[in-house]
Image (tube, rainbow, N blue to C red):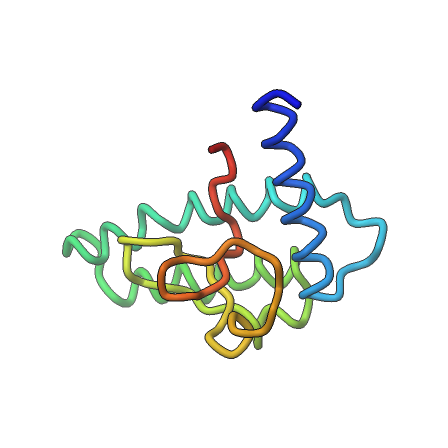
Length: 125
């Protein structure tokens, strides 16, 4: 299997794991799910970096998280998003993570050094 095929296999497997964790319908396309979440991750990260650097204020970040990010996560992952997702405001890692409780149950998904499950990891490597 070449690198591109291996990458797509990792993406599909991650999507299947997310479907199981969030109890999504069986017909949910795992690759499209991962693509949507990766897009949300990459939109949120610069906002968290700006917040940490002092170029975005807390009310603006809270407004983004409450009015754009959470609704998009709920639409994508359903009602379990509220109880299973932690939004990390530290730009040194991923923004979208499983909560501590959800991370330490065997989920089969990529985890950071702290053991938190990563919702939208970069699976290109």
